Amino acid sequence: MIDLLKRKKNKNKRLVALIDGEHHPQVTYDSLEKLKKYYAGKFAGLIFMGGTEKLVVDDLENYFGEKICIVEDIDTDFIEALNFFKPDIVYDLSDEPIVNYTIRMKVASFCFVKSCSYMGPDFLFEYEKKDIACSIPTISIIGTGKRIGKTAISAYLSKIFADRNKNICVVTMGRGGPRQPQILKGGAVNITPEYLLKLSKNGMHASSDYIEDALVSKLTTVGCRRCGGGFGGEVFLSNVKEGVAVAENLNPDLIVIEGSGASLPDVKTDANICIIGAYQSWESIVGYLGIYRLMISDLIIITMCEEPLADKKKIDFLKNEIAKINPHAKIVKTVFRPNPLSSISGKKVLVVMTAKEEAGPKIKNYLEEKYNCQVSNMTFNLSNRKELRKDLKRFCNYDTILTELKAASVDVVTDFAFKNKKAIVYLNNVPVVLNGSAKKLKDELGSIYNKIKLSKV
Image (tube, rainbow, N blue to C red; front, side, top):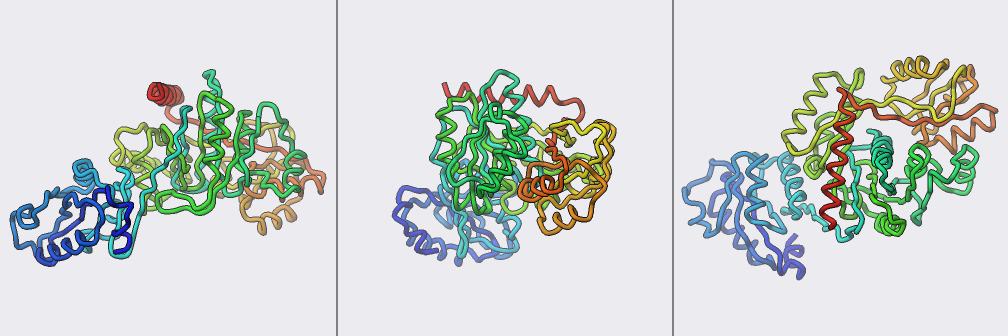
């Protein structure tokens, strides 16, 4: 870590140190002298995190000869300290029990929100500035994990913008995306099962997010890829920058960039919309650097807000806690409903999904009542090829397969349907906004777009 402090690129950067009262002031003083000796940039001041066990001096500023910000409430005071010092690096000289591992993850999130790095004796959360900015308004759809409905929400929101006479281009960054960014004009290309099988047999991931978006929204999409994901959403490999350049050349009114898992686009966007699954534990949402994702978002959409995935108590808890972290963001609650893209009326259907199995009875009842079909069997192993193949072989009392366009839906499910003379129909998971808030959501999206547009002028 000493070598990192000595970096020449730190020459013009500001550093603040975190200290606590569990270390004797003389020990802290000597540590600060060592830190100042090795750091190549400007030492800006101290943030006192608390603790009284060894705090034998009253006037900390006079003792250390540095400006000090005192943190009494981590959720409010730490951000204020960062606003005051405007550091590029925060170095942690505190420790348990004042700053435990949970608090350190919160500190790292706050640092990232304020575009600074966070480091200590054996760790570094390095904030990487996103140097690619788009001349066209951009919105990123980010999330707190996989299988929470980002693609469905992305397609839904993009259609709302398109219905308001906006020319939309969706850029995706899936884990199975193409090596070179691929343009797919959903309104011009007939995305049939045969088309998808051909892509699959040519070695492509035929259920990649950009293909699903183009199929269900009929909009133009640009498929990209990524690999790896850090605590703060950074990726190891990505061609999203090239994909955004491709999208810019199409001259849309708005570019929607769809994140992947909990990873973020590696380009600077004008606004963020964060998707959260109501079934997720609070720890999985805010743990590590999850708070960072919530804090940078302009709009937060909670999906799957219904039993048995989440009861009212859990949903209310999520909404209240999210509002504490980001009181400025609007929060919208939604559920998903399956929408077959072709008629299944009068058919005996095998439903193949990535959804939670607990949602099976509700999905079955909805399909049968809404689309006049008979759901003979269901499998939720779409992302588990081994188990999926077993399910396809053991189920037999059906004539039509209804599947999401995800995971193994082409190379396994569609291929199986053709070989066994079964009809294949793809479905779209349509978000339904709860409590009659659909118009409010549309108005909020319009407000976000107008704010971005003004900032580009």
